[in-house]
Length: 398
Image (tube, rainbow, N blue to C red):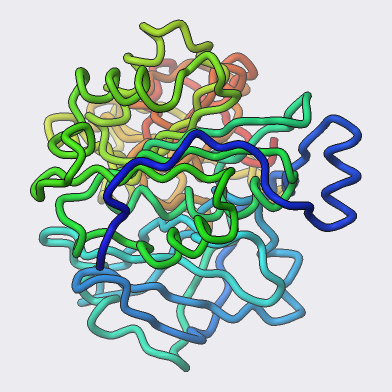
């Protein structure tokens, strides 16, 4: 599985694109496909294909029937959640869609996690013809409307963090004949690199507009700059030597918590506006921090001091009480009286469980999903929201 031995040249301009993208470029804008936010719902989808990517990862293609096409349209960079039961326990895992929008199907990549119950089961058991519950697409890790015809996008990804980036690269380069994309992609070895052939195909398709920088942490490359761990010094050196932040319109960072935080801090030190940086985590990677709650049993005794939690979902309202001493999340309490309350990761990462706080106060334990403008509009992550007032009301329909 060979990787390019030297960095690609800084992108210039490729050959002409289709009439539709030519028109968009001449108008001076790049408008990626975006979807209106909707409430996440699960439907049963059939597995159409399963393909090995590496020894520890697979690509899974789901068939989307015409009747559900509107429920599964998506913007490049969004994710789905998959739900199943193993050993009597319901499991939900989120996976980014790894291709630009295609009618009638969607693809995700699943990489085996160390000790990962769901990923191990999926890699060993998912097969064409099986049906499994798949949530409608969610997420804000998407490209924004550009105000000029020469946008330059940069992604820094590690391991399975490449999955949403694949869709972003394909869609942004196809949307405008003058767009550019640079990717810094870190893996342990060449054999661990997901989508290496697909990235090579994209490089062949857009030779002057796509720059690929494969960084290997446990395998020596001919370029010293692209060998070794992506620490702060190496990230800064790569940016200084190969990419030049002042020329970049939008940044995408996807990987483990420490890498994402390191890259955000480095970009901030280089003067990059925070509004131009988008990031996504699959997990926080911080075991010292408490995770979200979903399905934790809580018993309310008659003499307990309680919070009264009211929530609105699909036009109906429900109320549940939660003992103050339990430190129960809004999501966990809501699930005790209504099983279809939306959530996926329950760890403050995906944002599926977000709702507007309409009454009372809460404290969020973690927040890796809500943007500053969403916080300003009153959104909270209910999986992380612990009530701090006697009455709390949230609206999932907002």
